[in-house]
Length: 446
Image 1: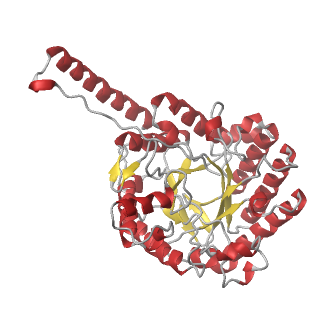
Image 2 (image 1 turned 90 degrees about the vertical axis):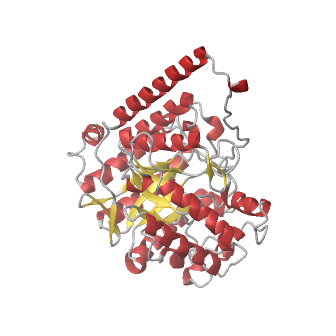
Image 3 (image 1 turned 30 degrees about the horizontal axis):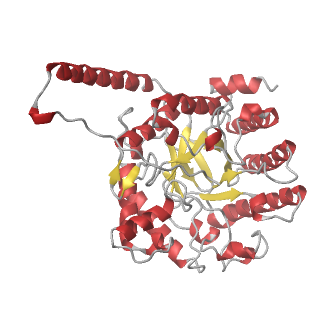
């Protein structure tokens, strides 16, 4: 459901012939250098005025920020880095982050990867496009400016933006790949080395705007290992489990400041008793992922779950799907309350507008159900730590949309519901009086 953008263009260098240096060219180069240098200084100065951030921490089943429990109302805008490469499109990124803050949202989940293809961050193993890295720098700096934290995903299980398929292709092209199967991403030593190098480069990146290494920047709420991992060639789950254990330990060896999650869809594996009672259908236990086993890894700080009832069921009516979502969420919150002893975030949820019986009111009803469950868990100091809607845009971005995307203020019921939920969570945390934006936002509801 994520769009795929292709055809990468590269920067070219201009060189003079026969070693000749033209005075005009030299003067122009000097002027350009000074302009860019002072331009960067001005940009950096603007971003130093942003709000002071602390790292989000985890204690048991709750997130904490500055010693107080933290519950999250947030959203997905996977396209932030891709839309920041060209300066002409950066205003839309800024507008989206500003709009999120004005709705009281606190965390945005977005891609910190683009492997191969158009505007790739990683052009080939270990080779990066500095132009695209500066786009990610901008996203992080602008998020901090707007008071938004980021959940940054490091690779895609799916093909859009490269994903594990691109890593496998690279290994195959270099003659070191063990298999052409996409799942060799998880077991091929050469590919594991590629990915570790990528992770190391990203985590130790020094932001050219803020001057802060990513691993030291509290603007980043958490790292996500991989979006929706599946390893269907090994339904036992052993292959994926081994990869998750190795990569989570590797990330923590580099970055002990940030929280870490996996990016799971939340399906129960073949050894779980809930595979028959909570999974949508039998196929869900044969994907090589296991919510309980995977989430129980020591270096994984919180569990992640997705919610797409209309993708998982095709014969159910809307009310049946909504009832299932309630069961699905309560099951995972119960798991984290009683067994995993970790927070759980529902990092993607949505309802497709391509359903035959779709009505916008259905989307509002489903989203209210999801948000009410989070609120009730939060009120009891439970593990239901937050949810992120898939996905929000600003106007003029149809090429990045899918059947779940929306411009929130163009759907007044959703816009109102989002603000209402932000205020309810802020009320539990006692943040409304401390935060000027929330105080103004939430006072309008009374």
